Amino acid sequence: MSEVNELHNRAMDLAELGLVERLRGNPEAELGYARQALEFEVAATQALTDRIEPTFSVLHRSAATIALQCGEHRLAEQLAAKALAEEPPNEIAEELRDVLEQAQFQRHLSLRGVELGPDELQMSLSGKGVGYGTVAVDAWAGRIQNVAKLIQRIVEWQQKLSFGKRGARQKTKEEFPILVSAPRAASFAVTLKVGHPVEPRHPIKIQAAINDFMDLMEMTNGSDIHGLSERVPESLYLSNFIQSAKEIAPDGERVSQVGFTTGRGNSRRQVSVTRAEDLQIFSPRPRTNVEPARHVKIRGTLRFVDYTDRQSPQIKIVDGNGKHISVNASAEIMNDVVREMWNMKVVVDGLKKGRSIHLEDIALDEQD
Image 1 (spheres, rainbow, N blue to C red):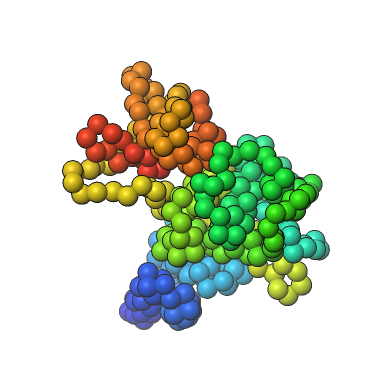
Image 2 (tube, rainbow, N blue to C red; image 1 turned 90 degrees about the vertical axis):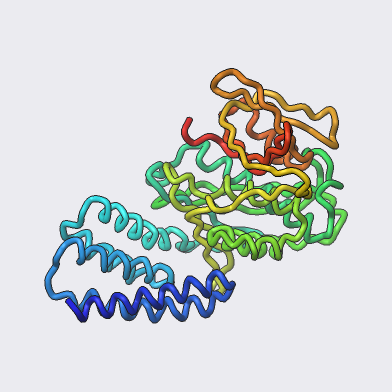
């Protein structure tokens, strides 16, 4: 066991160095440490002569997780399956199944004979609520709408248009319609084709917008708020993107993974999103330190929207006790985010200063 412990500890040291590099924004160095860690962890599983639990399953889970990080999906699948073939403790068995599902999801990201054009991408869903080519309508329709919204926004900030100039959200000839193919079985996969405006007023590069979309979703999965802030410097676009990305990301219940594939031939690119819970909407309004402020969380039903004063619009949440709570929000967030949640149970994260509460984040209440 001493050899196993030495190999495992060395792997964990290297994995920790990789985590440090991730926080520093050095993905290549992170991958280098992860590959070294994988070698030591796989060696530890091989050095374990007796299949003692939970040591056997823990080592294989660790090795499989690192293999996923390195992009070694087949190896991750083999390691997880080997541990599941034994009798791992229930909690570890669930974690192994999660790793196995993530490894197998890479097959769902493949195009399987489908050719994508420069203005197309494939979206795949996987999870307990996804059947053989079937899924609940509200589990995928909203995600497609948010993909369309993000691509529209990306084109706008690529053209250096300020968020506020666009005004109230409405369908115009500048909109980019999203066309959807028939779903494909195995996981739920569809091809999304980005349509062109009928009369574009500006030069438009749909492929560049799709590439930016893939970059931003990759940063979303890594909760890389620093990278997102650099890529989308205008705070209103950034807060709008984060909220939409969180709506696209898995809910952890019915959908556990959302994947996107672009390109053709050998130049295909795949991005798998498994989480986005660490991202928070940035407040577009500057904060001052004149008075102490504190964060508050409000649960209730979004019942009222007061948009009469566009400079200081408000929403009102009715909590479980029937109390009406007013929350200030920016006009832009009202347009693209809040209006989608009217009359629904929501959770609001706000910053309270004095009697005023300013919207920091809003999401549907998953506990409902």
